Image 1 (spheres, one colour):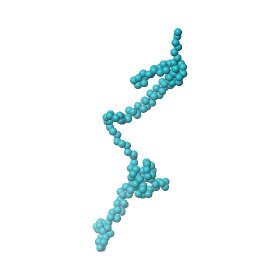
Image 2 (image 1 turned 180 degrees about the horizontal axis):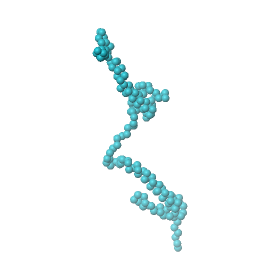
Image 3 (image 1 turned 30 degrees about the vertical axis):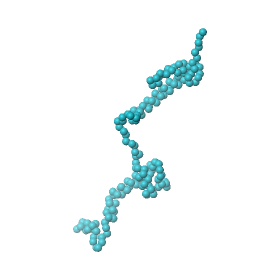
Length: 163
C-alpha cells in the first residue's frame, strides 16, 4: 500500500505546495508554500535587504540612545533659528504691528513674516541709534537750556573753536 502525501500551502491553503527553508536572524524556519508564494517571500527578503541598506546609512550617523549605553557626545538641543517667539510677540503687541491687517497669533509657531519684520525693526533701531545724526540729536536733547544768562556747554565749545 502506498501513501500519497499532499502538501497544502500555509498561506493560501492550495494543494501542491513544497517545503521550503529559510533563515531569519539566527533561526531556521520551514514552511509549505506554492512556488509563487515562495517567489513572493524571496522578493520580500530582497526588498527588505535593499531597504535595510538605505536605513543603514541613517543608522551609521545616528546616536545610540539605548538605555544604559554610554554616549560619547550629547548634541545640544536644537533651538529654532531666529528671534525668540516671546520677544517677537512682545514687540508686535507693543508696536501694534500688523501683517496683512492681522495681529500676531497669540499661540503656536510665530510665522516667518513676523520674525522677519521683528528682525528688520531691530536692525533699523540699531542703525538709528548708531548713526551720527542720532547721536548729535541725542546730545542736543541732553543739554539743559541756559539759565541766568549763562551759555550752555555747547555754546562755550563753539565760541572757543571760533577763536
